[in-house]
Length: 375
Ligand code: NAD
Ligand code: AHE
Ligand code: ZN
Image (cartoon, rainbow, N blue to C red; front, side, top):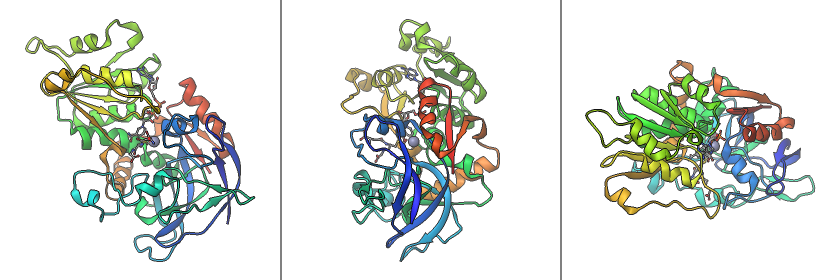
């Protein structure tokens, strides 16, 4: 079939909206009509050329929601008409990682996914002249129709709106999941969130859900203060207004009883490795945990004095908020439908596919929290 898609032809160039060929689903694959897709900073990370795994030409996008159109041979868990959320972290329930119960990082198809290919090593997308186009994070939601492995689709309730639940395909689950699955934040905790964008605000709403007492947001964009407070942030710091940000944050968390100070938990939602260091070092001696969520450009490395770890601080990372997609994503959708988590106010811009490059401009200017493309 033919479908409309926004194609990343070269690193650093705007996406080009065009008709492309899409082959039907093979064994274990499913054809999905994407109804809506968010634009995450990770799409920009790859589009810009900063992603060491970035390949071109490719159809980016990994934060979508849609409907099953056709199932390939051997597909048993889905049928046409089912509502689904694509999973860039699949859940095969059979690989050593899934069976370990220690991680959500299913390894069944990571090798081919990272090369922009379906599990059989081929691509379903091509230009009208036959030039192959690569998949992205196994999803390619910047295409109106896409083909996905069955193990990379979460079946969700049919009454949930696509233009909102697409955000559960990355940002919401990543932010809320980092708090509840990765950090396992307890009631009364003190936390610092660096970067109050589409991920950081979801960390804040996760912290509120978990019952944290002190939620400090840090952002260089002063307009993010109101956004953070809207979702439960109790304090805001613009690093440009203070001298030593680490000392400042440690001071803020001191109490008459505890003059050591430091956050119980911190979260990097910027992808900036200097910020990651600050996030680790503002946590409490003896038990502070810092969770890296941001993805950093090719060649960037994190640094700290080993003494920070010797004295009990823990550096952790999280992908997709530690969520097991097929199991946990339907629950996130239920939480949204029950009003337990908010999505609507964070979706600041609705765009058509033709307007997709505007979504990246809005991200850069700091005007948007999430732009969503509706097909
Ligand atoms: P975003 O652009 O919406 O938000 C980034 C925020 O960080 C902005 O508010 C910006 O002002 C702020 N910021 C930038 N530099 C800063 C600094 N030096 N100090 C403080 N604040 C600063 O991006 P997003 O969609 O929220 O994504 C955030 C990061 O998370 C990106 O690196 C993205 O690639 C990554 N991400 C990771 C996962 C995962 O599974 N680990 C999932 C989704 C996104
Ligand atoms: N390709 C990058 C890594 C990017 C990365 O870490 N991606 C996250 C999801 S970001 C979603 O917005 C992830 O899931 N990582 C686990 C994995 O297996 O990719 C690089 O640096 O090479
Ligand atoms: Zn993302």
